[in-house]
Length: 371
Ligand code: SAH
Ligand code: SF4
Image (cartoon, helix red, strand yellow):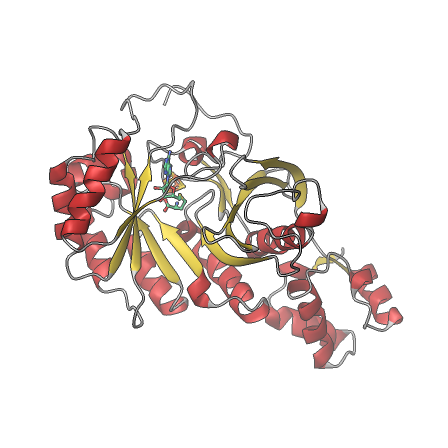
């Protein structure tokens, strides 16, 4: 049976080339083609001898994500639906950077669905179907990287916001694990993917963020296994009572433990932990909430991302009656934080017209509308 080249570890790859009687540098050459030049087949690797390419084609294959659909938002965001080898699917979202230019942030998925079942999240409503393999995580960046390069030449690129068609420097500058799934519940594969991004693809750790709903033991492990990668924590509430209701993971790892892990998270100079705070009308957006948030963050170098709740689907009946607060309330909340010296940025969700905004990803799966 042919081996999935991308599914092999570095050691297995080295052995694979040894067994073929090849010099070690061939292995490096192929990895360079795969991850630096985004080659999708051995035939594209033109500096390999033809007989080696032929052997590789016979004994191995390069798995690629199957691009099933691309949707373009009026704000320049693109959402990609990718099919996986076993018929499952995932979504990735490409967002033009605020400062324009030709740089993009790619929001990637780590799982098909999610086991944590947050009340406000469409992915959570799917439940967990499976975790992604490391190469399925990494391939989102390779596949979209190829698309980004070709953007302005394609109809999707014409007149796209923030895209300068005269420059050839289009690229993914940042990677965020904020798509489908809880990255820390797929820890091993996420760490391997992080190594692919930094060691093989050349991304700086500072340009990558892993977002967690608060799987506390794994936050400590992340600090050990992937130091200097940015940590984002989805806080979303300031009391256990409210957090238990909207984020069931809080019943296992309550706020006290979560904040302790954040306080102990090693940060290099000038780095901060990002706290995501989705605002829900009448639930977590009062002045008292803002004051409690200030208290929780004391002693942690932090930045708060205030995300107005995105309804995940108009027909969904939600028992908690979650609603987006008014603009005025959002600004008031931000102003309380600012007065206390807490940096808080209101994150207008990109791509909501194509269900690509935070919490709206469900990769075409039907979600249970009773929840
Ligand atoms: N599982 C990880 C990463 C994916 S979710 C986590 O929870 O952090 C990415 C972000 O989207 C989280 O901060 C989450 O709080 C936010 N989010 C989820 N559903 C949302 C919704 N309906 N509206 C706004 N933000 C949402
Ligand atoms: Fe999972 Fe994050 Fe959605 Fe919660 S918000 S259900 S942890 S993906």
